[in-house]
Length: 197
Image 1 (cartoon, rainbow, N blue to C red):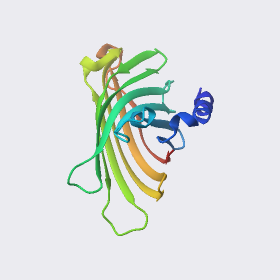
Image 2: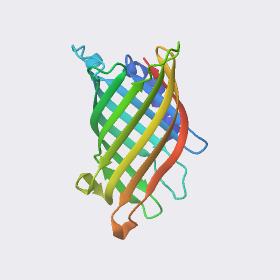
Image 3: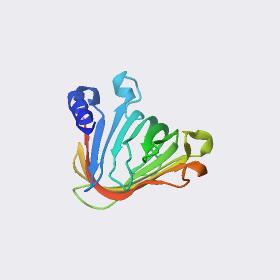
Image 4: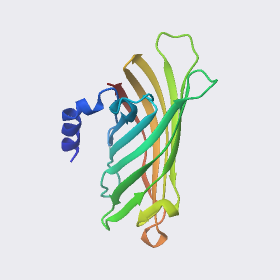
């Protein structure tokens, strides 16, 4: 399935024109994310603000776990009066199956994110960013009870169109109590890069 996804991304490069795609990994996991700038697609007066987001995370953990699939919508904008600070707000749909019992987890978490370019005198910008996505039980479906995703990244923008970063993420896909309750889908560090097209 991973090979099909990577092939689709390679063939769909034109779709990502003026957008971004990121890849991050460690010894066990691989994650691919894409942000499609809706303002660029319809040539609106508001480019680089409204995004369609897509995500794929394949993990190797203690149980037989399917990839986590994500798709959503995000608004991102520079914060007025604070140089280098960017704020994001949005929602996404998530889906995965976990374990031999094939527990199905589906949710619509709401999310916020911040990215800050550090005000240091350097030829290479340094960016710290963080994100939080949460779905309570009312926004969780199938066998799910809640969803919580936290991540933080530190990156260096080596050229205008590319950033290399290290990061940490923790994703909890909690289930209803009779199906096991609390469940950590992924809790790990990673390295990666983002390219803007």
